[in-house]
Length: 294
Image (cartoon, rainbow, N blue to C red; front, side, top):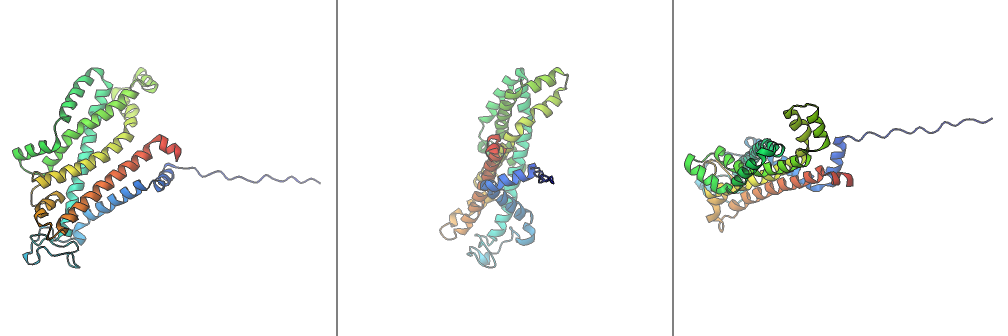
């Protein structure tokens, strides 16, 4: 008597979602993990500064230029202020300027770039205007604006945003030009789809990947420019602790108290390195060819 043997059941493979694939690629891409992790640590430290860092403005001449110790982890500066507290609070200014500049410049540049790439008549005018704005150095513009209006975080952000907008406009415009005459855009246009729907649903998604990467580079550049302006005395008000002003105020004490310069300099280098590593990791993650290889 022949007995029929049931074929072994084959379990269906678990669906691979976007989250698991992204996590797997992040594990294979150490730059993304290292950059993102360091950024998260700095953001958390800046937000929780009042919980574990002292007052960055408290002066104690009795302990001026003291080396690192259990009481002052990174030593004190020439006015007896705690260097560790000033470095932590200085991260707030750098992160604020970098994030706000990236968000504002990408938002404004995306809108202008969509209009420049979609409307042929406006393209020439907008492109020439953006070329003129790119010719203005951010540092010189900030120095002029501070001389006219006074030092403030808003003026520094505005001075850095203006030269960054044209770079975003040119990036978005190039992407829009490549997809403006695509079949799906032509079909939407022929079907009577409204202009804002075409731009937001059919064209804008194509620009998101390069825009995200560009935003990280803008953030890193804004942090460097803000530090340079603070070093020159054209940044935020002097009473606000920033890494650039810390280096400028302590550079004459470098042979005697090198920690007063090295601490903010290392913090600035680590933050810029973390943002650049995160941007490189995002670029590889969002690259379709890299995704296929993974």
